[in-house]
Image (cartoon, rainbow, N blue to C red; front, top):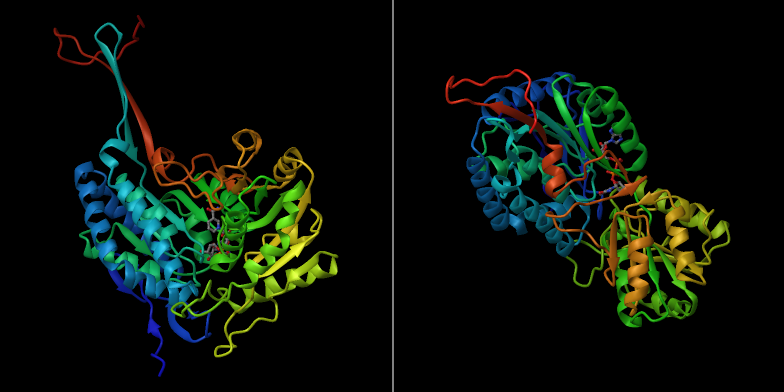
Length: 499
Ligand code: NAD
């Protein structure tokens, strides 16, 4: 028996509500295409009401002590940990991810909440005494106001948690517009935030597509925009947000290369390549989509095809399922088109997953693991982000050729090298123009106290999410220069002569 679809709410002005809604968005289980729920598509009045409520809440929250904000994050972290399995189950159902992957998605978000709990030390300003006679200088990091976040489908827990906990810990309020493809997990995160003790107006959630996003980008009361998603949309968000005077950080698409040196540990490399290319159905911005085999490393090709061939897709809770279905029929069609174009362009298809279907759930958005060799940089399977379980092999003669290939790619999100040589690893680490680099690690996603640093076409903006840069993004620096004399007890604001 299938459960009836749930009514998914927005969170506006502290109420879980359908709002004025101008239509509904259907949310499906990617493995079965069963309808899971309907979310309201925000009416412009809903967006205005969410921003107005967030702005009103900001007037009080900006005066809260950092200790109060820290304690809220500690309580939220505690609740998220207790609820991790339930969140992961919901996340699996609407995103298609295996349960293990979904647990990881939630866990990486919890780590950001832990980091946000350090706001008392992260949010400190600077001081310098005696910069002139009787004069000192100090700076505060002050909250900036109402911030917004626009998030993609592929990490419905981790990516909203990249954004609103840090923004709110900095003293701001937040309007989240999650992906319309899996909005139930972000709504659950919002419910838990309130359960943890947050004022229900600190975080607002509206649903919708381009129209709601554009309204947020142009809204006079929004100060900062965090975006994660595809490159064309990110470019639009960045230009439109900046044109309306917002601070914008836009984390975008990727094409990540893993370089295999002839001296790399063979079995470890093959397993890492297969898992990082087809795991999570390849729907990760840090998935490896190109294997660059240097010289005799070419010898791993057959083993790689065997390892990928053993990866069987399946339902989120199915024994032995290596990954789940793609998010939508449209995503599957796109991947199948690119596989077809790869074959037509002359790439050697060593493993073809385009005909794969689940025996009991053929209506799901399945694609089996797919491996191409003899791929060249002008083929669309190389130039486009496939976002499916497809790995392309490019063969080169030297490490410098591999580095030149990577540096010529417009994207710069992640890359890795597998080698037993410290000298090769160091050369790669220093010469490659990509923000997140792995050495014998296929998916080098940094922890939240570092920065997630997409470079070039993978990022528009200047301050990256996580860590110190995230705190800078969500705060404004105010620098105060003051002089107090014993005689007056008043500051003298006339010209200061520097010592
Ligand atoms: P997407 O760009 O289609 O959607 C992202 C968000 O933008 C969604 O909330 C969507 O509703 C909104 N949106 C879509 N079209 C819009 C438009 N025309 N105007 C305004 N808003 C619009 O991305 P997706 O398919 O949900 O996610 C996959 C993409 O995200 C991949 O390209 C992946 O590489 C990227 N991604 C990047 C990172 C990173 O950190 N760099 C992390 C995760 C995912």
